[in-house]
Length: 187
Image (cartoon, rainbow, N blue to C red; front, side, top):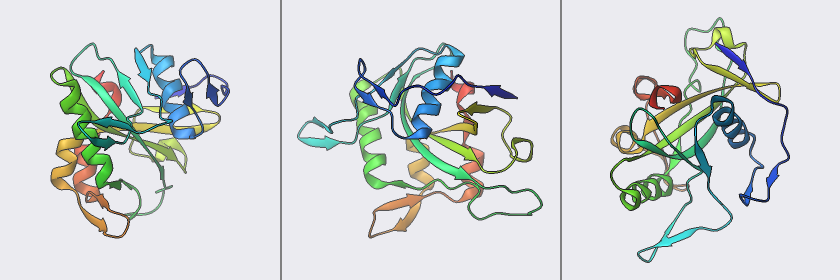
């Protein structure tokens, strides 16, 4: 299913103080608005401190009608055109930093019961959507996006070190694709 988004918004929302410069986050916000899902965009201008620990900010708090509310950290990635290829090594690109994992786990502890920390991978489709593995495709500013969520704790269990220098980890593509859930299934 392909859904057309609204025209582009200004990149700065002065009331929320959320600077919307990353097209993946702007597309996600538009997607949430188009679906009517209540959410709060988080001011990302400064890192937060909690218990003496500096926390990376989350991007959205999204309220669910069906389960836990979501504490969301958006991870924008390109999803390659896989047409005619048996496998593509970058199809499920999903790296995050160890700081991302720790901060999101801490946010989950802070908010407590009724909230789940998730990474939402906003995939910008590089090929025609009909050749992608996604059923729900959203169009924003002429770009096709698919949004899938993974629970931060479950992701941390399957992730392995990618780069010690950059402190990044990633999950094996096959395991990640099984774990990834279309975000609409959680709302």
